[in-house]
Length: 231
Image (cartoon, rainbow, N blue to C red; front, side):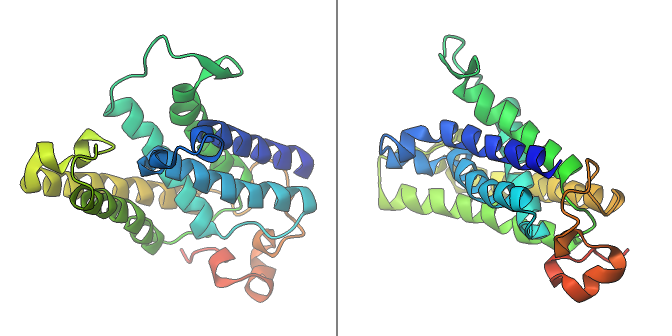
């Protein structure tokens, strides 16, 4: 089973690299301004680690990192489908008959969540992790705002961070609203993690890993990040 899990995770790396190919293949550095692309690279790194670790039965990424990636992928999918304009219906297929938007905003976020739900060890997260994860979206808001000052005339990546259109009041309102929504979403992920059984729902492929050791032995073998949260 660990081979199937490892290959599935490496396939998600392929999806993430397809979605970000304009940056790493074509040199479109400006594409890094988008939260979607930043999340795509983060998925590629973390799932390369997770995929190789699954194949070799080594230690998995710590729970706080894997949970954070799950949150950022969920943010990408939800914002794209609920806030942003829909993808051009004439957009070309780039892989498996799917467009870039379908891969980055639908398939990849869903697959990352399914991986978290079924293939990760659980009870490793704490409520404080949701607050820590929020630092990244807040840093992103700050980054886009500072970039707007440093590079006048540069386009803002998304309408909800466009200081020129929103003004300071509108921007701060969005920071509070989106920040609160992302915090709640992070707490939902933590809650799901703490409700699920300790081991992966699909197979016991990480039994040799300290992160997937039994509750009785994890305290001795695993790191604090890998230990289940107290209930």
